[in-house]
Image (cartoon, rainbow over all chains, first blue to last red; front, side, top):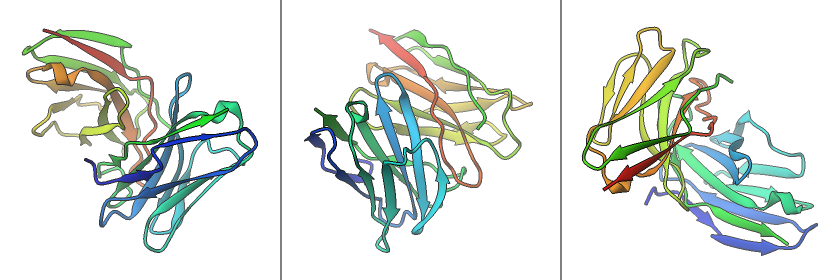
Length: 114
Length: 110
């Protein structure tokens, strides 16, 4: 158990809908990362937050948005869902959000868009 | 973002050492070298990381070339539970964001 909690574990929704994925980081970790893993794309970095502020952005679509709240949990919002958004979404947290710390990954949320 | 190059797959026998290579010729002076592994249907798991010197922990050792353009992850005695996809990643010193490549699929034979 990494200490990072993601909910829900599974989500099935229809095209065009909007969903919210939630991540609770390890206690004391200030930084949260979001990744998308699909069969054909591998693990893609989406976005990073540090203590409530956006720190780094990756290949995140405009239909996707995220935020980190004062209690440090984070949410990833996916809207106007398409079939191609079906993937595993991982959240990770790290204490200082820099290159000299390890990141701890959650078990992921499996999103299926039908 | 600097990239890494790893073999697609490797095989090892149980209880033998495994050396997983990684090339990162465009590494910047402040990038950390990270290794993560991912078992099927699980999130990636941290293995080890380093900057310039070789590193050891309970899971593995990391040997970093003097010019930092390559590194090797060493599993001292492979077990069946070590069968996974191993990712060599360069971690930005400022953000710590990890850009995953395709990784090396390690098979361990009994």
